[in-house]
Image 1 (spheres, rainbow, N blue to C red):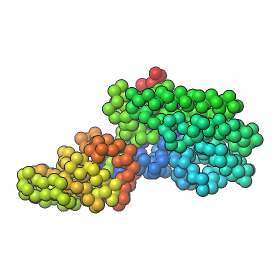
Image 2 (image 1 turned 90 degrees about the vertical axis):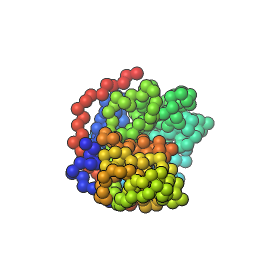
Image 3 (image 1 turned 90 degrees about the horizontal axis):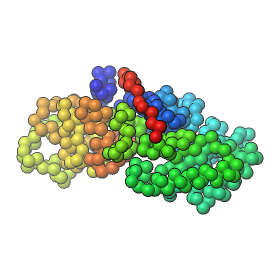
Image 4 (image 1 turned 60 degrees about the horizontal axis):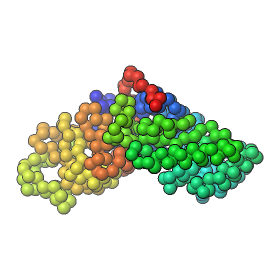
Length: 398
Protein backbone atom coordinates (compact mmCIF):
# COMPACT_ATOMS: atom_id res chain seq x y z
CA UNK A 1 0.00 0.00 0.00
CA UNK A 2 1.30 3.45 -0.83
CA UNK A 3 2.06 5.41 2.34
CA UNK A 4 -0.05 8.27 0.98
CA UNK A 5 -3.19 6.13 1.24
CA UNK A 6 -2.46 4.50 4.56
CA UNK A 7 -5.15 4.81 7.24
CA UNK A 8 -2.50 6.62 9.26
CA UNK A 9 -2.61 9.57 6.86
CA UNK A 10 -6.13 11.02 6.79
CA UNK A 11 -7.18 12.87 3.66
CA UNK A 12 -7.00 16.64 3.46
CA UNK A 13 -8.35 19.09 0.87
CA UNK A 14 -5.14 18.96 -1.16
CA UNK A 15 -1.72 17.98 0.08
CA UNK A 16 1.75 16.77 -0.76
CA UNK A 17 2.78 13.76 1.30
CA UNK A 18 6.51 13.10 1.59
CA UNK A 19 7.71 9.70 2.75
CA UNK A 20 11.00 10.26 4.56
CA UNK A 21 11.57 6.51 4.73
CA UNK A 22 11.72 6.50 0.93
CA UNK A 23 14.43 9.16 0.92
CA UNK A 24 16.53 7.24 3.44
CA UNK A 25 15.98 4.03 1.48
CA UNK A 26 16.96 5.67 -1.81
CA UNK A 27 20.14 7.24 -0.46
CA UNK A 28 21.24 3.96 1.07
CA UNK A 29 20.63 1.98 -2.09
CA UNK A 30 22.31 4.56 -4.29
CA UNK A 31 25.33 4.61 -2.03
CA UNK A 32 25.49 0.81 -2.04
CA UNK A 33 25.27 0.72 -5.83
CA UNK A 34 27.62 3.58 -6.67
CA UNK A 35 30.25 2.69 -4.07
CA UNK A 36 31.26 6.33 -4.00
CA UNK A 37 30.63 9.00 -1.37
CA UNK A 38 27.40 10.86 -2.07
CA UNK A 39 26.45 14.51 -1.94
CA UNK A 40 22.67 14.61 -1.70
CA UNK A 41 21.37 17.73 -3.42
CA UNK A 42 18.55 19.37 -1.47
CA UNK A 43 18.32 22.69 -3.32
CA UNK A 44 14.93 24.13 -4.32
CA UNK A 45 13.40 23.14 -0.99
CA UNK A 46 14.65 19.60 -1.36
CA UNK A 47 13.26 19.32 -4.89
CA UNK A 48 9.88 20.17 -3.42
CA UNK A 49 10.21 17.60 -0.65
CA UNK A 50 11.27 19.98 2.15
CA UNK A 51 14.81 21.29 2.56
CA UNK A 52 15.41 20.45 6.19
CA UNK A 53 13.39 17.23 6.28
CA UNK A 54 14.93 15.87 3.08
CA UNK A 55 18.41 16.81 4.27
CA UNK A 56 17.92 15.09 7.60
CA UNK A 57 16.55 11.93 5.96
CA UNK A 58 19.43 11.90 3.49
CA UNK A 59 21.95 12.10 6.31
CA UNK A 60 20.19 9.23 8.05
CA UNK A 61 20.42 7.25 4.81
CA UNK A 62 24.18 7.77 4.64
CA UNK A 63 24.72 10.99 2.68
CA UNK A 64 28.29 12.18 3.16
CA UNK A 65 27.57 15.72 1.96
CA UNK A 66 24.58 17.92 1.28
CA UNK A 67 24.52 20.36 -1.61
CA UNK A 68 22.45 23.50 -2.15
CA UNK A 69 22.38 26.42 -4.53
CA UNK A 70 21.82 29.44 -2.29
CA UNK A 71 23.35 30.86 0.85
CA UNK A 72 19.92 30.96 2.50
CA UNK A 73 19.44 27.24 1.91
CA UNK A 74 22.82 26.41 3.40
CA UNK A 75 22.26 28.57 6.47
CA UNK A 76 18.77 27.13 6.98
CA UNK A 77 20.27 23.65 7.17
CA UNK A 78 22.80 24.77 9.74
CA UNK A 79 20.11 26.52 11.78
CA UNK A 80 18.12 23.28 11.75
CA UNK A 81 21.07 21.45 13.28
CA UNK A 82 22.91 19.94 10.32
CA UNK A 83 26.64 19.80 11.09
CA UNK A 84 27.98 17.66 8.22
CA UNK A 85 29.85 18.69 5.10
CA UNK A 86 27.76 21.11 3.08
CA UNK A 87 28.41 22.88 -0.23
CA UNK A 88 26.72 26.00 -1.62
CA UNK A 89 27.40 27.05 -5.19
CA UNK A 90 25.39 30.08 -6.24
CA UNK A 91 26.51 32.95 -4.03
CA UNK A 92 25.52 36.37 -5.32
CA UNK A 93 28.16 39.09 -5.75
CA UNK A 94 26.16 41.31 -3.40
CA UNK A 95 25.77 38.68 -0.68
CA UNK A 96 28.00 38.75 2.40
CA UNK A 97 29.64 35.40 3.08
CA UNK A 98 30.73 35.83 6.68
CA UNK A 99 27.81 33.74 7.96
CA UNK A 100 28.67 30.95 5.53
CA UNK A 101 32.31 30.92 6.58
CA UNK A 102 31.38 31.04 10.26
CA UNK A 103 28.99 28.11 9.74
CA UNK A 104 31.77 25.98 8.22
CA UNK A 105 30.06 25.74 4.83
CA UNK A 106 32.08 25.00 1.70
CA UNK A 107 31.50 27.78 -0.82
CA UNK A 108 32.07 27.78 -4.56
CA UNK A 109 34.27 30.26 -6.38
CA UNK A 110 33.79 31.01 -10.07
CA UNK A 111 36.09 34.03 -10.29
CA UNK A 112 39.15 35.62 -8.74
CA UNK A 113 36.82 38.24 -7.28
CA UNK A 114 34.99 35.45 -5.44
CA UNK A 115 38.26 34.22 -3.97
CA UNK A 116 39.24 37.66 -2.74
CA UNK A 117 35.80 38.17 -1.22
CA UNK A 118 35.93 34.82 0.58
CA UNK A 119 39.47 35.40 1.84
CA UNK A 120 38.53 38.85 3.14
CA UNK A 121 35.59 37.41 5.04
CA UNK A 122 37.80 34.74 6.55
CA UNK A 123 40.37 37.31 7.62
CA UNK A 124 37.71 39.38 9.37
CA UNK A 125 36.46 36.30 11.21
CA UNK A 126 39.86 34.82 11.96
CA UNK A 127 38.82 31.67 10.08
CA UNK A 128 39.97 29.88 6.94
CA UNK A 129 37.12 29.58 4.42
CA UNK A 130 36.65 26.24 2.72
CA UNK A 131 36.44 26.94 -0.99
CA UNK A 132 35.66 24.78 -4.00
CA UNK A 133 36.59 25.87 -7.51
CA UNK A 134 34.13 25.26 -10.33
CA UNK A 135 35.21 24.89 -13.95
CA UNK A 136 32.74 25.30 -16.81
CA UNK A 137 33.42 22.24 -18.94
CA UNK A 138 30.72 22.84 -21.54
CA UNK A 139 27.42 23.77 -19.94
CA UNK A 140 28.14 27.49 -20.35
CA UNK A 141 26.54 28.14 -17.00
CA UNK A 142 28.25 28.55 -13.62
CA UNK A 143 31.98 28.12 -13.29
CA UNK A 144 35.16 29.62 -14.66
CA UNK A 145 35.66 29.53 -18.40
CA UNK A 146 38.61 27.40 -19.44
CA UNK A 147 40.42 30.55 -20.60
CA UNK A 148 40.17 31.94 -17.06
CA UNK A 149 40.92 28.73 -15.21
CA UNK A 150 44.69 29.09 -14.87
CA UNK A 151 44.33 32.56 -13.36
CA UNK A 152 41.70 31.32 -10.90
CA UNK A 153 43.88 28.39 -9.91
CA UNK A 154 46.97 30.57 -9.49
CA UNK A 155 45.17 33.01 -7.22
CA UNK A 156 43.62 30.18 -5.23
CA UNK A 157 47.03 28.61 -4.72
CA UNK A 158 48.51 31.94 -3.65
CA UNK A 159 45.74 32.58 -1.14
CA UNK A 160 45.97 29.04 0.16
CA UNK A 161 49.72 29.41 0.67
CA UNK A 162 48.98 32.51 2.74
CA UNK A 163 46.50 30.58 4.85
CA UNK A 164 43.66 32.78 3.61
CA UNK A 165 41.56 29.95 2.13
CA UNK A 166 41.55 26.17 1.90
CA UNK A 167 40.71 24.68 -1.50
CA UNK A 168 38.64 21.61 -0.66
CA UNK A 169 37.28 20.67 -4.07
CA UNK A 170 37.18 21.10 -7.82
CA UNK A 171 33.98 20.40 -9.66
CA UNK A 172 31.85 20.83 -12.75
CA UNK A 173 28.45 19.80 -14.10
CA UNK A 174 27.37 17.69 -17.06
CA UNK A 175 25.29 19.14 -19.87
CA UNK A 176 23.65 15.99 -21.23
CA UNK A 177 24.56 13.01 -19.07
CA UNK A 178 21.03 11.62 -19.46
CA UNK A 179 21.71 11.21 -23.18
CA UNK A 180 24.53 8.66 -23.63
CA UNK A 181 24.65 9.30 -27.39
CA UNK A 182 25.66 12.94 -26.95
CA UNK A 183 29.46 13.26 -27.27
CA UNK A 184 29.51 16.39 -25.09
CA UNK A 185 29.86 14.25 -21.96
CA UNK A 186 33.08 12.68 -23.22
CA UNK A 187 34.42 16.13 -23.99
CA UNK A 188 33.42 17.43 -20.57
CA UNK A 189 35.19 14.58 -18.82
CA UNK A 190 38.36 15.38 -20.76
CA UNK A 191 38.15 19.10 -20.05
CA UNK A 192 37.55 18.38 -16.38
CA UNK A 193 40.55 16.07 -16.22
CA UNK A 194 42.71 18.73 -17.86
CA UNK A 195 41.45 21.35 -15.40
CA UNK A 196 42.26 19.15 -12.42
CA UNK A 197 45.74 18.53 -13.83
CA UNK A 198 46.33 22.28 -14.14
CA UNK A 199 45.25 22.76 -10.54
CA UNK A 200 47.47 19.96 -9.28
CA UNK A 201 50.44 21.26 -11.25
CA UNK A 202 49.91 24.60 -9.51
CA UNK A 203 50.13 22.84 -6.16
CA UNK A 204 46.47 22.47 -5.21
CA UNK A 205 45.46 19.22 -3.51
CA UNK A 206 41.67 19.25 -3.25
CA UNK A 207 39.93 16.69 -1.07
CA UNK A 208 37.25 15.94 -3.65
CA UNK A 209 36.81 16.10 -7.41
CA UNK A 210 33.21 15.79 -8.53
CA UNK A 211 31.51 15.93 -11.89
CA UNK A 212 28.68 13.39 -11.92
CA UNK A 213 25.06 14.27 -11.26
CA UNK A 214 22.34 11.61 -10.89
CA UNK A 215 22.37 10.56 -14.55
CA UNK A 216 26.15 10.77 -14.81
CA UNK A 217 26.63 8.67 -11.69
CA UNK A 218 24.31 5.95 -13.00
CA UNK A 219 25.26 5.92 -16.68
CA UNK A 220 28.93 6.97 -16.67
CA UNK A 221 30.74 5.06 -13.90
CA UNK A 222 34.07 6.61 -14.89
CA UNK A 223 32.78 10.04 -13.92
CA UNK A 224 32.16 9.17 -10.27
CA UNK A 225 35.63 10.23 -9.10
CA UNK A 226 35.75 11.15 -5.39
CA UNK A 227 32.14 12.21 -4.92
CA UNK A 228 28.84 12.16 -6.82
CA UNK A 229 26.12 14.78 -6.56
CA UNK A 230 22.80 12.96 -6.51
CA UNK A 231 19.71 15.11 -6.75
CA UNK A 232 16.55 13.87 -8.41
CA UNK A 233 17.37 10.17 -7.97
CA UNK A 234 17.32 10.73 -4.21
CA UNK A 235 13.61 11.35 -4.47
CA UNK A 236 12.91 8.20 -6.49
CA UNK A 237 12.76 9.87 -9.90
CA UNK A 238 14.67 8.40 -12.84
CA UNK A 239 17.07 11.04 -14.22
CA UNK A 240 17.26 9.30 -17.58
CA UNK A 241 13.93 7.59 -18.25
CA UNK A 242 13.91 5.08 -21.06
CA UNK A 243 17.68 4.89 -21.51
CA UNK A 244 18.70 1.40 -22.58
CA UNK A 245 21.14 -0.28 -20.23
CA UNK A 246 20.41 2.01 -17.30
CA UNK A 247 20.67 0.29 -13.91
CA UNK A 248 17.56 2.16 -12.74
CA UNK A 249 15.10 -0.76 -12.96
CA UNK A 250 17.27 -2.88 -10.66
CA UNK A 251 17.85 -0.24 -8.00
CA UNK A 252 14.42 -0.45 -6.40
CA UNK A 253 14.20 3.25 -5.64
CA UNK A 254 10.85 4.58 -4.42
CA UNK A 255 9.24 7.93 -5.32
CA UNK A 256 9.01 9.89 -2.09
CA UNK A 257 6.24 12.32 -3.08
CA UNK A 258 2.53 11.71 -3.39
CA UNK A 259 0.27 14.58 -4.45
CA UNK A 260 -3.35 14.00 -3.56
CA UNK A 261 -6.63 15.83 -3.01
CA UNK A 262 -10.23 15.33 -1.97
CA UNK A 263 -12.82 15.06 -4.73
CA UNK A 264 -14.92 18.21 -4.35
CA UNK A 265 -17.90 17.47 -6.59
CA UNK A 266 -19.33 14.78 -8.86
CA UNK A 267 -21.99 15.45 -11.48
CA UNK A 268 -23.37 14.09 -14.73
CA UNK A 269 -22.99 15.84 -18.06
CA UNK A 270 -24.62 14.94 -21.33
CA UNK A 271 -23.28 14.18 -24.78
CA UNK A 272 -22.18 17.37 -26.50
CA UNK A 273 -21.47 19.29 -23.30
CA UNK A 274 -18.08 20.99 -23.06
CA UNK A 275 -15.78 21.04 -20.06
CA UNK A 276 -13.75 23.94 -18.62
CA UNK A 277 -12.61 27.10 -20.38
CA UNK A 278 -13.13 27.25 -24.14
CA UNK A 279 -14.53 23.73 -24.16
CA UNK A 280 -11.29 22.11 -25.29
CA UNK A 281 -12.96 18.79 -24.51
CA UNK A 282 -16.55 17.91 -25.35
CA UNK A 283 -18.24 14.76 -24.08
CA UNK A 284 -19.16 12.33 -26.84
CA UNK A 285 -21.58 10.49 -24.56
CA UNK A 286 -23.09 11.00 -21.10
CA UNK A 287 -20.52 10.71 -18.33
CA UNK A 288 -19.77 11.76 -14.78
CA UNK A 289 -17.11 14.37 -14.11
CA UNK A 290 -15.33 15.13 -10.86
CA UNK A 291 -13.92 18.40 -9.60
CA UNK A 292 -10.44 18.30 -8.03
CA UNK A 293 -9.38 21.41 -6.03
CA UNK A 294 -5.93 21.96 -7.55
CA UNK A 295 -4.91 24.06 -10.52
CA UNK A 296 -2.09 26.05 -11.97
CA UNK A 297 -1.92 28.14 -8.77
CA UNK A 298 -0.77 24.92 -7.11
CA UNK A 299 1.78 24.31 -9.86
CA UNK A 300 -0.28 21.99 -12.07
CA UNK A 301 0.94 22.47 -15.63
CA UNK A 302 -1.72 23.90 -17.94
CA UNK A 303 -0.29 21.65 -20.63
CA UNK A 304 -1.60 18.66 -18.63
CA UNK A 305 -5.16 19.43 -19.68
CA UNK A 306 -6.68 16.62 -21.78
CA UNK A 307 -3.46 14.65 -21.36
CA UNK A 308 -2.72 13.70 -17.76
CA UNK A 309 -4.56 11.16 -15.61
CA UNK A 310 -5.29 10.85 -11.91
CA UNK A 311 -6.12 7.87 -9.71
CA UNK A 312 -9.60 7.83 -8.22
CA UNK A 313 -12.08 5.06 -7.55
CA UNK A 314 -9.50 2.35 -8.18
CA UNK A 315 -8.56 3.41 -11.70
CA UNK A 316 -6.80 6.07 -13.71
CA UNK A 317 -9.17 8.79 -14.89
CA UNK A 318 -8.31 11.37 -17.56
CA UNK A 319 -8.08 15.09 -16.92
CA UNK A 320 -10.63 16.78 -19.19
CA UNK A 321 -10.51 20.31 -20.47
CA UNK A 322 -8.28 23.22 -19.56
CA UNK A 323 -6.45 23.31 -16.23
CA UNK A 324 -7.89 26.25 -14.25
CA UNK A 325 -6.31 28.36 -11.54
CA UNK A 326 -7.99 26.48 -8.70
CA UNK A 327 -9.25 23.21 -10.14
CA UNK A 328 -9.16 20.49 -12.72
CA UNK A 329 -11.98 18.30 -14.02
CA UNK A 330 -11.60 14.55 -14.44
CA UNK A 331 -13.75 12.09 -16.37
CA UNK A 332 -15.20 9.46 -14.04
CA UNK A 333 -17.27 7.66 -16.63
CA UNK A 334 -19.90 5.57 -14.87
CA UNK A 335 -17.74 4.81 -11.84
CA UNK A 336 -19.44 4.82 -8.46
CA UNK A 337 -17.36 7.62 -6.95
CA UNK A 338 -18.67 10.16 -4.46
CA UNK A 339 -17.48 13.58 -3.30
CA UNK A 340 -14.87 13.20 -0.60
CA UNK A 341 -13.09 10.36 -2.38
CA UNK A 342 -9.32 10.47 -2.56
CA UNK A 343 -7.73 11.61 -5.81
CA UNK A 344 -4.05 10.79 -6.30
CA UNK A 345 -2.42 13.00 -8.90
CA UNK A 346 0.84 11.12 -8.69
CA UNK A 347 2.54 8.79 -6.27
CA UNK A 348 4.76 5.73 -6.20
CA UNK A 349 2.87 3.95 -8.97
CA UNK A 350 2.76 0.80 -6.85
CA UNK A 351 -1.03 0.61 -6.85
CA UNK A 352 -1.49 1.78 -10.42
CA UNK A 353 -1.59 5.51 -9.79
CA UNK A 354 0.32 7.87 -12.11
CA UNK A 355 3.85 8.89 -11.19
CA UNK A 356 5.53 12.27 -11.48
CA UNK A 357 7.20 10.92 -14.61
CA UNK A 358 3.78 10.15 -16.09
CA UNK A 359 2.72 13.73 -15.43
CA UNK A 360 5.96 15.01 -16.92
CA UNK A 361 5.37 13.10 -20.13
CA UNK A 362 1.76 14.26 -20.30
CA UNK A 363 2.86 17.86 -19.78
CA UNK A 364 5.84 17.68 -22.15
CA UNK A 365 8.29 18.55 -19.41
CA UNK A 366 10.59 16.75 -16.97
CA UNK A 367 9.72 15.23 -13.62
CA UNK A 368 12.10 17.69 -11.93
CA UNK A 369 9.68 20.48 -12.84
CA UNK A 370 6.62 18.52 -11.75
CA UNK A 371 7.85 17.97 -8.20
CA UNK A 372 9.60 21.30 -7.64
CA UNK A 373 6.74 23.53 -8.78
CA UNK A 374 3.90 21.80 -6.96
CA UNK A 375 2.73 23.68 -3.87
CA UNK A 376 0.69 26.84 -3.70
CA UNK A 377 -2.23 26.18 -1.36
CA UNK A 378 -1.40 22.50 -1.01
CA UNK A 379 -0.12 21.54 2.43
CA UNK A 380 3.04 19.47 2.67
CA UNK A 381 3.12 16.69 5.23
CA UNK A 382 6.00 14.38 6.11
CA UNK A 383 5.37 10.79 7.07
CA UNK A 384 7.51 7.76 7.84
CA UNK A 385 6.23 4.63 6.15
CA UNK A 386 7.19 1.11 7.14
CA UNK A 387 9.21 0.79 3.93
CA UNK A 388 11.72 -1.98 4.51
CA UNK A 389 15.13 -2.04 2.87
CA UNK A 390 15.33 -5.80 2.85
CA UNK A 391 16.94 -6.43 -0.51
CA UNK A 392 20.54 -5.92 -1.54
CA UNK A 393 21.76 -3.92 -4.50
CA UNK A 394 24.66 -5.14 -6.56
CA UNK A 395 27.47 -2.61 -6.59
CA UNK A 396 28.66 -1.27 -9.92
CA UNK A 397 32.38 -1.53 -10.57
CA UNK A 398 32.22 -0.82 -14.28
